Length: 198
Image 1 (cartoon, rainbow, N blue to C red):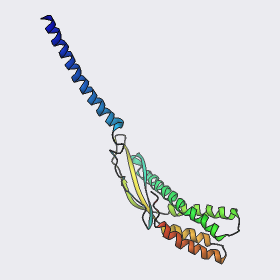
Image 2 (tube, rainbow, N blue to C red):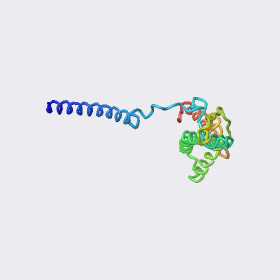
Image 3 (cartoon, rainbow, N blue to C red):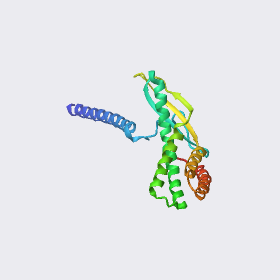
Image 4 (cartoon, one colour):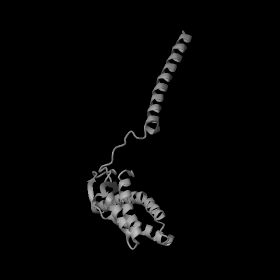
């Protein structure tokens, strides 16, 4: 009788252990899935005010976060963030073209002049990027800490940057270079239609 009682007790303990073991393994599996076993993009969303480069325009979305009482400052920061992104795209797209322009012209003016012109173009790009207006402005709701997020989108005409750079290239240069600057304007404008920097 005692042996039968010990056998029933042992079976009950083993069954209980198996039930607890199965439950904990499910919990571990669930936890590992939530902490790193699942897709890293499961909760990904498109940003508010999405803006993408197209055939005619460079575009960017800017972000800023901070105290809800500082909406004006946050808007300026988000706008500057978007302008910086567009300036980076423009510089990447145009600078190589300008260097190629100097190689094709064979201006024989020396690298100092060419470097100065590249520097001028950097300033032109910043000027064009900073002379913009918003195409979208949104604010998030206020969180528990009293903070909000600001989202802005801007677009800048590709033709505007090509014209500004070409005008600078032809400034104070001999007629042949001015003509090549016009060729640069046409060719670069066409190529930038296909440029997507995002």
